[in-house]
Length: 107
Length: 41
Image (cartoon, rainbow over all chains, first blue to last red; front, side):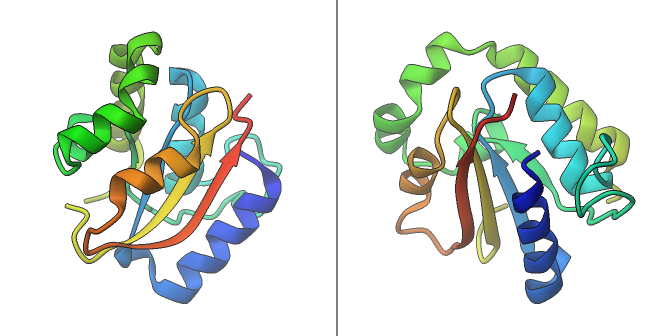
């Protein structure tokens, strides 16, 4: 995850409170999306950015996950997301990001 | 699940950009506090 964005996310969590925040990802592949989810939940696994060792515990979902998709007007989703949904490995992305949540996110 | 939440959008230049995700959330009881499009890889 971009180092500047790690700083920004950390500052926003301090400003707004971790419990009030949900992170939505748009990653093109499962592995990278999983790494970003892990970063905002359990800290930077690359030990490079401001979130190294910082467990923000922010719930992170990919926009393609059913929990998020269900909350979006189907017409708007179709116009903005559906085309990419056709070319991305949706099942792999959903499986990876949800397993990262299960592994690291304390509920 | 999103209602009343502050949302951080981390879009991907090679996947779904932040702006597309923002459009999906327009008109909802959600505050987008940060939206960006980065290169994930």
